[in-house]
Image 1 (cartoon, rainbow, N blue to C red):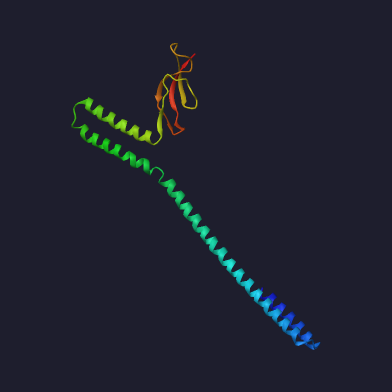
Image 2 (cartoon, rainbow, N blue to C red; image 1 turned 120 degrees about the vertical axis):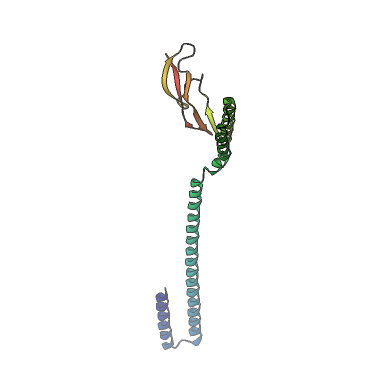
Length: 189
């Protein structure tokens, strides 16, 4: 850009020299000089604006890179620590299990042990329910491929065909998504 300015100045100076040789009045020379000064000021002003906008563009690019890096880190942390809240809620159940294991050797009454395990199981299932996990109820219901996986068919005249007779493995939903299909035995024809 500076090279163009020099060419413009040189051209204007040549024009001035021609004008001086033609002996035009000093007012015309003054006007031309003023115009040169104005043009040089405009060029300098435009060059300063270009520098300012280049710096602004560099700053914005750096800000965007920092934002992108921060966002990627946040996403990684979200993925890496997504289960943290659930684990924290499960820790008391683990503590209960450990206490039960310690007292199991001392206790001779099987019913008390059974009662303790049932309490821990209920607490565990409540924690899962609070997080949106629920059992899929299957027995006595019509077979549904969205919730059940048939592992066997058995004739049974007491129920309609394709009714779940027995549940081999419980199925679970997490909120509205099936996370494990129930493995079932279905009544056949």
